Length: 362
Image (cartoon, rainbow, N blue to C red; front, side, top):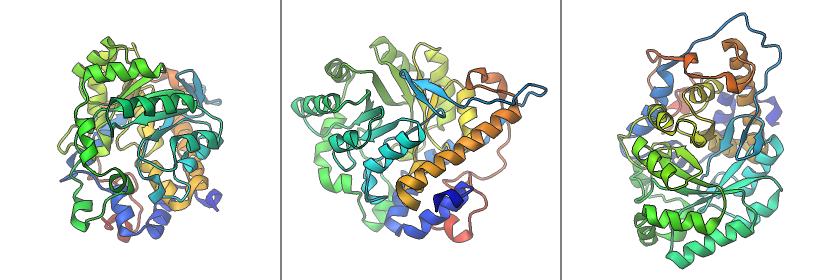
């Protein structure tokens, strides 16, 4: 039963037991040398927390709000394509877990079942993430469907003009269902995205609009100038451009430019409660969980994802008490400093007690 799992180590071991090698590679892998993936983790490992003492932390509030919706913890569930490879219920499992636990999920254009079925599965606020796989008429219809289905916001992914060269997949010849479904020719529409086409989609949607994949201060500024509501810092978990910077380094740059003018979301290597607090101290309003979510789904679907969220909630609460804050609003840059990384970064380095067969299973 999921309630018996006390750590993410146990959940990841179960995920590995259930996954075939193709599915495991899909979760764990990244582009080419996987340098961006490793830098995501390395940047987190190079941040040390600076605890304050003799503060009353008997009562700790881990909650926050995002786009007017209350979250039990400052963690969204990032959009993942081809969720049906991880659990038979696909995106419905994530929506149900988010509703049961008390957070929000982003629904990918390229997952199953349909956006309408996921929206109807449970009544809680969800965000629809857009990939472009057709012309303007196709895109208009997709946006209208999301709005009519009751999504609370739209998120346009802007770091995917081309599909990353994910060599674990290339070596085995396996492609996720989303690629088999749409093929590669239709990605030409994603490659043709411009600021002007983004403007058109934002106006068409009439909902809070998020740009996912911002990686420079310059693009963050352009997004704000054009009325984007939320800046989402992401390098796609290292799965797109190899040799990009780590997400926490990018967050410092982008959050400094945004300066509180819009909410900031960040993902990339975030696996532990201490990672969440580091990101918030550097200027993020909320984080998004990708691989963390995928491992939980692979280990046991909706129930295991809820349990994983309970585990990271416990880590967040414990770390808040130990650094001397009782609410997330107290976090700022004074709670983190640069430090020497203690471990070599890789996709599982946040979990040092995994058995050798799991750590070497890539």
